[in-house]
Length: 243
Image 1 (spheres, rainbow, N blue to C red):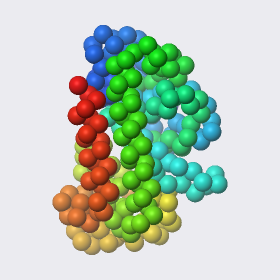
Image 2 (cartoon, one colour):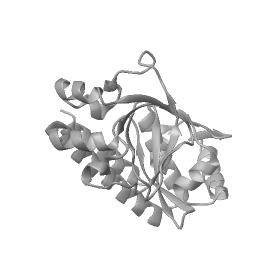
Image 3 (cartoon, helix red, strand yellow):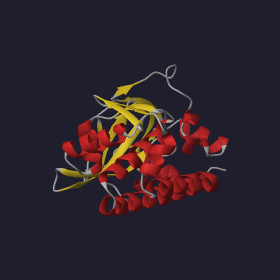
Image 4 (tube, rainbow, N blue to C red):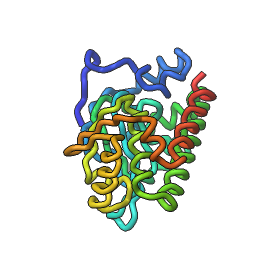
């Protein structure tokens, strides 16, 4: 993780959760924020380890992985500029519940967790947006768990790619077979077969981890309904909390 200068750092409003705060609250919070650069593959949290910092991504993307027996993983959420990493600290949790790994490098605002807890206790506006966002994260995790149990891998991969596209606001991004295997809780050969099936349908191009979505509507049709449910839950939180 690298620190970036104030000149290189985007304004805190680059994060939508921060942008939802009244100007006076944002100004006070900004003094406690530290700009950092996070790199692909960097592990920010591990389950049961102390949460030392809270992160508000700007152009970065962070994957939340549930971990079983120290080695089996399943992605249960994504955190981008719409939210924050470490929301459960405000709910009284001092340790991480998931592994948080950087999926896309970029900038983020970072705050000491103890300072965040203090600020949260005295800031009603921050409480309002955070409660709504936490509710969205929970809904996302529940739906992904249901999806992982009942839907075929090809549909699950389509759902994952579409959610990533929405977070990054781009049809082109980089995700390795290994990362997708960890996220979807399957072997790499399964990811290869599912990606090949989507590519043969003309929905994506996937080569050496470089993904390009060619047909968004087609990929949505190939996905399960879980994509729309997760998307609508996020849109609902944005419309009601960020005012």
